[in-house]
Image (cartoon, rainbow over all chains, first blue to last red; front, side):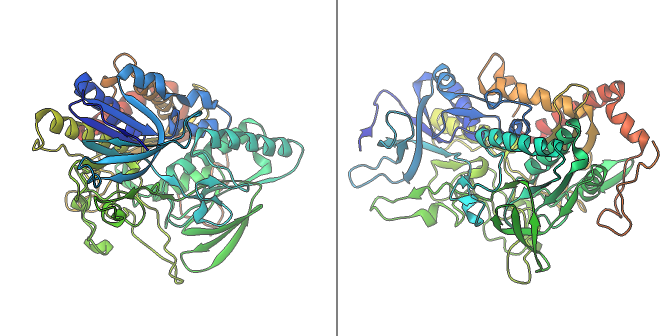
Length: 498
Length: 53
């Protein structure tokens, strides 16, 4: 091990993770801090991935090269120190010989893979994203590795593999062999139903295009207690003078496209061509498939925290699910007691004020959807989504706070961005052509319902809406190019909102 | 455009939902209407974004 401490820098900010939240935090921090201070990004990946477009890769409408780019040249341009490595542990109090906090990282770069290094920091932003916990469901995978029976669209490589498997099914259908498709969530505690929702309708679209739709049985399986929950307890959208539940919209879309659904399902085992599941009413079932994409549950990446005496304080810094504790109310208790104010606004760790967590890496106070379990005691409910637009806003907010503390002093007030005061835009699009695609475009405000401010639905129905049509499809295309442009720090990138 | 509701099966899981008719479906791909919706949706999204920062 070697310590790195460069005296020329007044302050060093380390950002763990180079996804939507981490990349946003690091690039804005580098811009605001200038060259007088150092921003370091630690991420095991060499490429940035615009994850929402993985869906198009997963049906062969885009290549993985179109949704990824190399991080190194972008960070070089931004003056960011880039470490292609995974973080192993945080020492927020330093160690016996120094009070300076540091992070232990292990290189994942070809040529130096496995090399362990300590990097000291003044401020730390934890934006590692999740561990894709395929191993939580027997047969779905091992640890964070995808298994052999199903496919995934969580990474560009996974999506590329999914597209090849889909093509094999299409070839079989063209030869007259009927195929069963099963898409959804692979565990009772999954999030990201939106990604699976988008993928199932992209598959349906592609099968229509290939002229084999009549040879396919397509089925949805998810841990939502009702269709259209999406991990946010559903939403009501204003249309035709009514505030209409997302359940009605989702069921309508599934019906229109001839897709059946299984909801309230915890997939507890996957075998070749079979998914075993338990329902909220306690019944057990098996669904057969020829092609299946099941989203894995998320967990923290397994970072350890160690104090000055060398004792493990992981349970102090992180919640049991491995996500970092922040300024949330973790003692809200039962669903009936939940409030919008339970949700964090500054993302500062309560124990160590120079540590923050944003994006998926922060520990939410509780789910957004009402917790449910089967009579057997199996919890079956979506966990809260914290991806996309909220992730980017959190990253920028936290970077703002850290930069203020570095530039204005350690008592500078922190910036706030609670998911209970934050909206999100979601566009689920199928097809890639300008005039033959279709999309469901939705906005939700706020992401976390505030039943005190908006009695009844918990949301502002002027800004919570959804509709199907070409317009959403065009928006999805524009967002793809806009966000990759922004992430590459091309001209005017700061003008593009998160 | 007959049998728009053919996917609904009596007393199956989709019997209680709504289903779009031919007009609603046509408007989804009507370019002129969708250009207007594109502007409206973008403006609404911009308001949501500005309220979120």
